[in-house]
Length: 529
Image 1 (cartoon, rainbow, N blue to C red):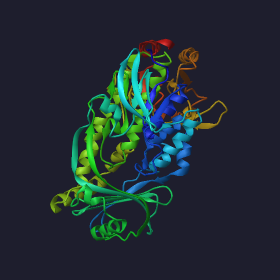
Image 2 (image 1 turned 120 degrees about the vertical axis):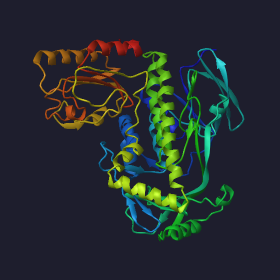
Image 3 (image 1 turned 60 degrees about the horizontal axis):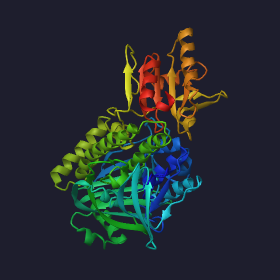
Image 4 (image 1 turned 180 degrees about the vertical axis):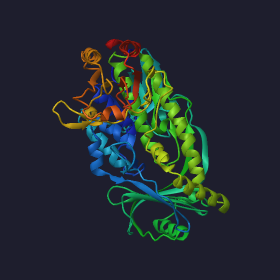
């Protein structure tokens, strides 16, 4: 039996919902199932980072989240004596969203579900995947409803976004490989009677343990503490009053807590599946990698997995890209997950130090980094603006005789100020909002020759004949009168950039090389060559 044209997404958390929405916006009908009868009402992940918000802007949905979340502009980190070690701030980040957005996962899922419903797609709840079978031109997905009815459906592609206990991963015979860190932690979402501003998180470090408290929506705070002397079973019985006492006794901080909506113990795993793609089956989010909540990377990484895959899958399903494009999901996102685990695992171990000497050394290092101005680079890393795919087989960089540097192929495309067709000032990111196409950016340089400028405009017009695939913009004096876009891309000379639907640079040439650009497009997107 041949596959239907509808891909299947297993798991309706933020990762699965983001993939479904991006595919729907690209004109792909999807089916999404979840074994839970109702959406989760637990807070779980509570931070959206700048890079995820940029991607939500590209989907045209970011305002939904900004209206509900709390903007957290930085964090204050103290030692056990109440001395300020560092106060990293996010206001300097080169993004329209220089903050973390505190928002509970349940609300993130609700907003994504509403947007998905606008495309006529609803989550099939109470339906679980029970097995995978080989099939012609697809994969056989055996599903079972809450009533016990079974169905075998052959689909062209399947995405497993069903969490750390993934049924899809199990059906593939894959395991999360890594380690469980030696500590027990408790998280609680509460209200606090104190006078701290709700635009800054706070962390406390001592030999007895670690506490992190961050603002959330609905006047709540996310409290995370480690309890190294307790087993996970013992931690399950910890009350809110005991958490409050622990924070007061360890750090001398009076933080009266009340109205808890969620208290949960957890252990930290640092684990990664060896593959994120097996033939026509993909894994994303916690189904593929689990790690420490330090830095709030988990949900954001899953969403970015989903959005990396969705645009590629849409083009392949529409017959507009070679299937080899799907191989680059594994190449890009598995490597990203490996880098992430190398970062957050050691960071978590550093936060969990207990010997007074090593604690004091750690605190001196944190303070010294602040004095040297190194916290800015840490902020960029944890805001995920430095995620890049420079080694991806799907990116190309050609630069000859150009003294500028600028963003390279595989890196995040920067935002830039420009003037739109009506003469109003806008930005690239705003212009791309709700647009699932590639973007071709042509920079003539500060003082282009008139004849060469005409050639570049003709290049843009040529690609304008492919409106379903790409939108071309020439940054001439009308579009970039003050040269601000040239500055953002460090285009001190002529250059051309092709930006992917997920906001990363697919192709760069400087000076602009139309033949290399056409060859690149022919290699990956034959329908538009």
